[in-house]
Length: 142
Image (cartoon, rainbow, N blue to C red; front, side):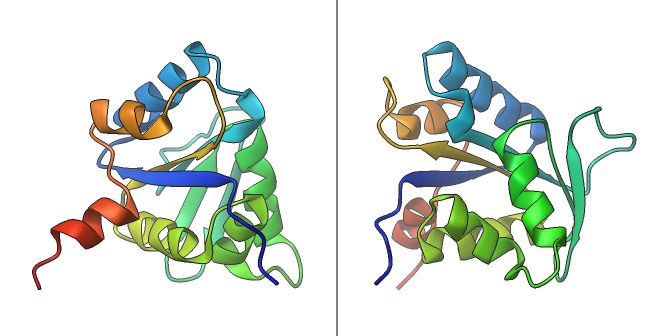
C-alpha cells in the first residue's frame, strides 16, 4: 500500500529562482532536511559536498549538500529505481515525481519541500515563479 506523500515539488525556469524559493522556505523556518533543490545540466564545477548523477533520459542532475544529495546517490546506486523512485522514496507522490523528472529533462530546476512547515510552500513557490504539476494540469487545454 503506497504511503501518503509528505513532500510537494515545483519546477522553476532558472536555478536562481529555485534557489531564492528554497532560501525563503528555509528563512521562514522550514526544516533544512525537508528542502531539496535539483538542477539539470549544472555548471561545472559543482560545489563541494554536492552530488551529480547521470539520469537516463534527463542528463546530469545536481544537488547541493543535504537531502538532495542522498536522492542523487540513490539514483547512481546499483539497483536504484531511477530518479522517480528516489523522489518517491524522499516523500513525493508518484505523479509529482514523474513531473519532476520531466521538468528536469526539459532543463528546468526543481524544489522539493516537506509538508507541515511554518509556511505554505505553494505561496513561496508562486512568489518566485515556480509551478506545480497541479498548475500545469489545470492550465492544459481540454
